[in-house]
Amino acid sequence: MLEQLKKDIELKLSSAEAFAGAALPPVELSPAPEHTGADLSLNWAMAAAKVLRKNPLEIAKQAAVLLREVNAIADATAAAPGFINVQLEDKFLTAAALDRRIKSSQLSKHKILIEFVSANPTGPLHVASGRGAALGDSLVRIHRALGHSCDSEYYVNDAGNQAQLLAASLKARIEGKEPPENGYHGAYLIDMAHKAPKDLKEEDYGRWAMEYLIQTQEEDMQAFRVQFTRWFRESELHKAGAVQSALEELEKNGYAYKKDDAVWFGSTKDEEAKDDKDRVLVRTDGRPTYFLADIAYHKNKFDRGYDTLVDILGADHHGYVPRMKAAVHALGHEESAFVPIIHQLVHLLDNGEQVKMSKRAGKFITLRELTDEVGADACRFFFASRTPNAQMTFDIELAKKQSNENPVFYVQYVHARIHSIFAAAAEKGVEPGDILTPLAPQERALLMKLVWFKPVLHNCLRDMSPHHLTTYLMELAGLFHSFYDTCRVLDEANLPLTRSRLLICQRVAERIKKGLEFLGVSAPEKM
Image (tube, rainbow, N blue to C red; front, side, top):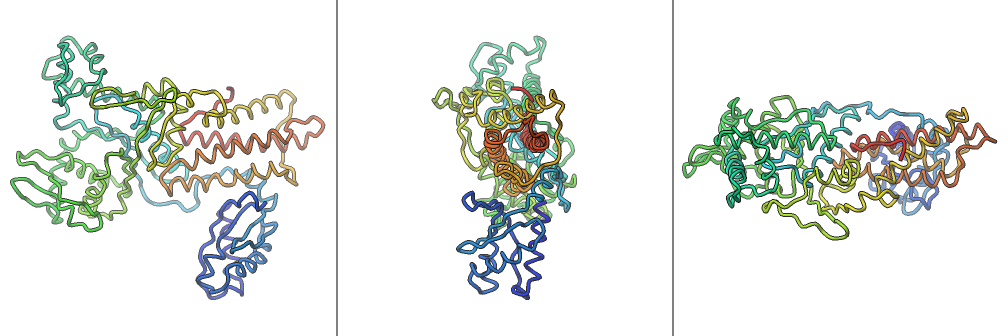
């Protein structure tokens, strides 16, 4: 409903004689600061001052007079240096509470593919993979909820010499020895050595180990509530001749050249990508590099009809971005079609002390271990609560707490409390009814927060981060606690008011459940 209000305000301003003939800026609606007592705040007058060549406060005063005539607006006032504070009518808020629509009326025609996790099948998934999984899966869910065509994919690097190293490492563990120095040293290989079939031939060690680990990763993702549209194997590209096809495409477009008995990609040729050096595509012995296979994979994505490719990458992939941007351009696509998101490291705290981890030494906490210890709900919520470009500290003890200190418990508890209210109301035979006006301040605050749900989802897509949603849910939970402490819900002496507040509670519970669903978090009815 804010979308329509925005249009109504823009129409009112653009048709005003005072602003006629000017190329007016768009109107941006924001929550008003609490001290103003208003519902919305507009900085439009300050943006329009450059065009109208007037004092922004004078423009705000003129605009405020006009906005008082707009349906849904009860009052509008100007504030220095040029803000317009808007008070909405109660009927607008009550109507907004009944509006469950999320999908946008104007949908993007883009077909989006979000690739994430894509960990090498040489060991169990670690905690950083969980952050990428929570980020990617939530973005897929939000895209789909808003009506976008969006698929998810896990790219499995099951080609190359990894299988050989894995085989050598497994063989050593089966024989009771340490793996080679450049092999895999995790304790998981000891467990795999016990599970390996007794009749397994030595030449099949690598393939068996890789398939076992791929299955383990699939199970880890299921436990983490992540379902991929497709698990795409690198070996499929090689079998289909896609790697050679990609090389030929680059050669045709003038981006591949031979030097020192190798084939190189001219990534420095693309000034926008800003790569610092050219990259090898085919080694001197004729073997393609991982980079060429990655180019073939992205070409495959475009060939399947996707026009926006989102890659969620780990913290060590900064150098990968410019070369892949150049590759996308070399394949004949706009670089903007490639959207890289790099998420930073996760530091684990256990009893106040940082957990030391070394993947090379094989000492690390797996995602499954963390999920089993604190639960998928806490993992998903905590991982989603920070922007991808910020490092995060995951406090294991906090994640296990059953108190309001734990943000996911804080939000889930509101959902459970509302359901306990419903149960008590049902015993008395009372059901939700129409919302009564005038609204109490705590009721207004809750309903106003409900209005912002859809814009918050759009902000998640704008910034490619679900942290806006976790913040929103915590703020909504806080407003409900204030409402519950101040406004009596079940009042036998005033059934109309009880029914009104039950409907407000119902809408809050729906919003919390839906928001948690987008984060991959459950919404329990009892706690």
